[in-house]
Image (cartoon, rainbow, N blue to C red; front, side, top):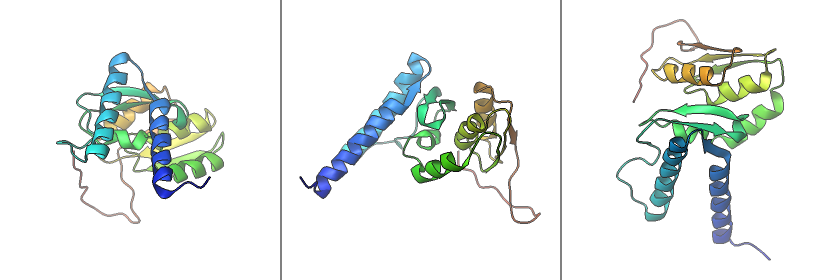
Amino acid sequence: MKMNRKNKSFSENLKMLYEILTDIKGIRNIDELTYLTVIIRVIIKKVLKQDPLPAYLASRDFLVRVKSRERSMIYCPAKTDALPHIMPYFERKTWKIMKSIIKRGDVFIDVGAYIGTYSIAIAHKVGRDGIVISLEPSPMYYILCKNIKINGLENCIALKKAAWSKSTHLELYYNP
């Protein structure tokens, strides 16, 4: 039986929803409720094509465990776009490549680490013999540090620095 384009799209959306609901779990009940509330808003926005606020904005901070990111715990602050970065579909091809080449004992430099989605998962993967250096110049640096601490990672070093091709002064544009 051939799958037409509409059925394939529905099937892909259903698979994505399943991944979202099974990959990420709130650490506490209130975290799970906050996360699910945001997901419901995303679904409503997709179906009804309306929402007064961006769907990724949670009204409160929450903490989740992400299976597909080496079972990392990630703190997502309220009113930020942190949530899309931890979704199982976020940069899926990049994650697949990373998981295939990163191994125990490696050194990894995360330029523009943001909240640490890559840094945290890869620090777990490289283990105590490896090291992760995370660069984040924005105010989200403090969230990155919090996520490193929550995960108990001693092999992950966060630096409030930017990277550029030469030594110079640049303006950082940040939209909270």
